[in-house]
Image 1: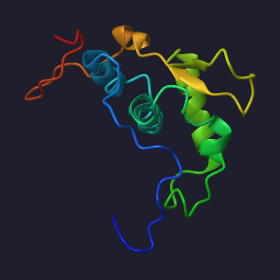
Image 2: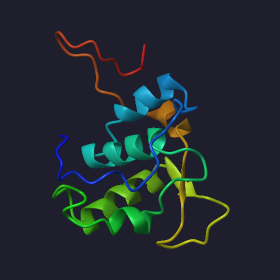
Image 3: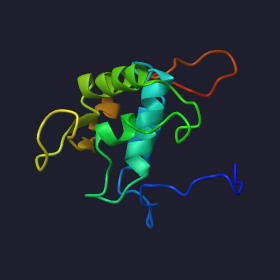
Length: 130
C-alpha cells in the first residue's frame, strides 16, 4: 500500500539480510505453539532491525491505530509478546532495564524444538522438519 497519505516508517529499514539461520527462522514461523499474531511479531523483530536499533516493546505498543493501520490492540500485542517470551524466542537485552522500555533480543534456538504441522494427505509439512 503506497499512497501519498502513507507515513514513512519511523524505524530504520534494514540494509542487509538478517544474520539468523534461515532454517531456524522457517521452523519458528511454523511453530504451532505460537499464535499467528506472535509469529508476526517474531518475524517483525527477527528481520526488521539492525542490531542495537530494535524498537522497545513500549514503542511498538504505543503506535497509534492509524500508524498500525487498525491492527491489533495493545492487550493482544502484549499477550503475543508474552507467548514469545515464555517459549524463549524473546529475552530482555542486557543493556536495557526490564519493563516496558526494554529492548528484546530475538533467539531462534527454541525453533529447534518447534511443534510443526504433521504431514497430512497432500501437505508437504512434516513434524520432524525433514
